[in-house]
Each structure stands twice: as structure tokens, then as C-alpha cells.
Length: 122
Image (cartoon, rainbow, N blue to C red; front, side):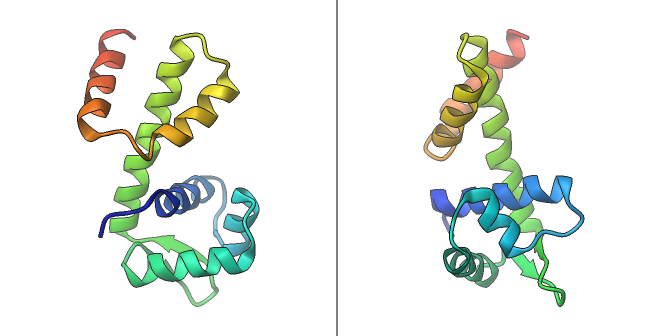
């Protein structure tokens, strides 16, 4: 399954929330993204059906290995793109916002070249 931008955003959000909270629930995702609870429920149902998340008996959300791999890939892009934009002198908040948009559309080839550039220019 090819993930859509919104699905990647959900996975990345679950990953980021799980780094600061012991348990992540749908309401946490809704609050973080500013989406309605019903919209989040629909998206999470799709992610569950496709094997990216598990919903545990206490209704907490856990990334599966498939979901964790996808979330880490998106988050890696996010961090690298934010770093690249900040190195150009872009305001950190703007760099963060723009990286969030770019991370979903950038090709693997271009991203690999950005990583190489960042590694050479640290």
C-alpha cells in the first residue's frame, strides 16, 4: 500500500506523541493535528486495516513494525529538511512548517542527495 500524505502525517504524529507519552489515544492525535475526533477515527481505522497500527484493549494506539518503519522514514525526512532549510537561514518555525509540507512529496532520489549534502556540510 502506498501511503498518502495524510496517512504519513498520522503515523508521524503517533510516533512523535509516543516519544513523549506512555500511551497515545485517538484524542491525543486529534488534539495534536487539530482534526475532529470522527476524522481521526476514520483515518486510524484505515491504518489499522492496513497493518500500520494496533489499537490495544485500553484503546491506546501502537505502531506496528510496518507503521514504525513508515513513521521513522517520514520523520527522518522531516528532520533533515528542517535542518537543510535552517542552514539556508530560514526561520526555525518556517523551516519546520515547510519541511512538513515537503516531506510528503519529495522523491527518494532527491532526499538521498539532501542527506549526502548534509553529511558533507556538517
